[in-house]
Amino acid sequence: MDFFGFLNDSVTPCHTVKSLHEAFGRAGFKSVGIDDVSKMAPGESFFVERGSALVAVRMPKKNGAESRFKLALAHVDFPALKVAPNPDKNAAGVQKLHTEVYGSPLYTSWLDRDLGYAGILAVKKEGSIVAKPFRGKKLFRIPQLAVHLNRGVNQDGLKVNPQTDFDVLWKAAGCGSQNFRDALAQELAPGEELLDFDVQFFDAQPANAGGMNDEWVYSGRIDNLTSCHAIAEALIATEACEKDFAVAAFFNNEEVGSLSRTGAGGNFLKAVLESIPLPSNLSAALSDSFALSIDVAHATHPNSPEKHEPNHAPVLGGGVVLKTNSQNRYAGDVLGSARLRDLCARAEVPLQDFVMRNDMACGSTVGPTVSAMLGIPTVDIGEPILSMHSIREMMAIKDHESMIRLVSAFFC
Ligand SMILES: [Zn+2]
Image (cartoon, rainbow, N blue to C red; front, side, top):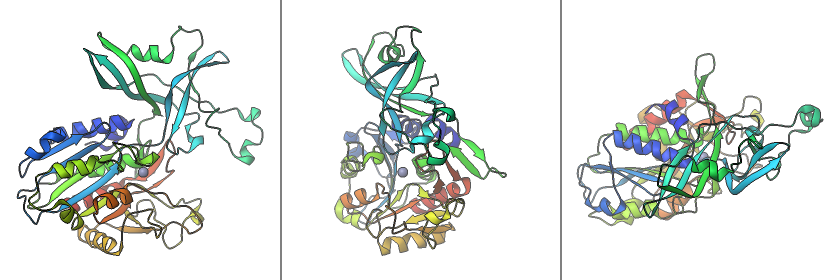
C-alpha cells in the first residue's frame, strides 16, 4: 500500500478505515460481520468493521490449545476541527462555519492553511439509514489577523481562543442562499435524504518528501497513520503462522480518551476475539500472548533539545522508540520491554528509549486500556516524529521502514 497515497486518502477516521478496508480486501482478507467470525477456518484471513474501527485477523494454519495472539494496535483518528450541528454564521461579508475542536490540536498550526472537508453523511435511502463517506472538493481557510492588527504577536506569541477564532471562512455572503446542510445535500444521489452529518476539516496539502536526501516526510495526520500503515503492511505481507493468530486492531477516538463503541475502551476487539473458535480458554491464551501498542513518539527537537530527558531523547531517523512511564501512562513491564528488545535485535531494528521528563506531563495511548481489558502483556512503541498534533507533522522514512520490519518480524 503506497504510504503517501495512504496519508493523502485517510483524511478522517472513516476514510482511514476505508483505506484499510480496501488494502486488506486487495490482499485477499474476507470482509465479514461479527456473526461470521466463528465460521472462519484455520489459515483464513478476515476483517470486521464497526463504524470507524477495524480488526483484521490472520488465523493460524493449526488452531490448537497452544495457539496464542500476536496483537498490533493503533488509532485511526487525529486532532481536527469538526463542523458543529448548526454551523452557519455571518460576519464581515462572509458566511462562516462554527467548528468544535476534536482532540488536542496545536491551535496555531490550523491558521493560514488550505483546509479540505470530509466525513460521513447519514442518509435515508429506501427506508433505511446508512452512512455515506464523503469528501468535498473545495478549499477553505482560517486566516490569521495581520501583524499590523495584532501588534506584539511576535513577542508575546499567538493566543488562539477556540470559541471565537476557529470559525472557518466558507463562502462570500450573498453568493447563493445556501446554508451548510443544503450544500451537503447536493452531494446526494436521487432518492437519498440527508438526515445528519459528521464532517471535519483537514490539511489539504498532500504529503511531501523533504530534506536534502528526501529522508523526511511532511504530512498531516502522521500521528497515527504511520502506525496504521506499518501494521497493515506487515500483516498483509505475513503468511498465516503455524499456531498463532496475527491480529491488527485499528481504533477510533484515541485522541478523546478511547471510551466509545469504536474506541479501545469499548468492547469491539474483545467481541471479535471471543467470536474466534478457540479450543482453549481465551483469557489464558491472552495472558500468555503479546501486544504492540503502536503510536508516534516525540523526537528531540533540534532547536529545543532541553525539552527531553537527556538520556532518553530519541532522534529522527534513529529507529523505533520504546515508550515507558512509571505512572503507567504507557503499557508495559520489564518482561515486555525485554521481549521487545529481543525482537528488535533479531529483526535488526534500532531501538531508542523514551521517558518523559519528571517536570512535564506525559501523554498516553490505547496500550494501557487494551492491556488492562484483555489481560495481555503489552508494550508501547512508536516512530519518532516532530510537531506532534500540528496540522502538519514530520517524520523520517527510515524509521517507518524499521517499524514495518519490526511488526513483520513480530507477526511471523
Ligand atoms: Zn497518537
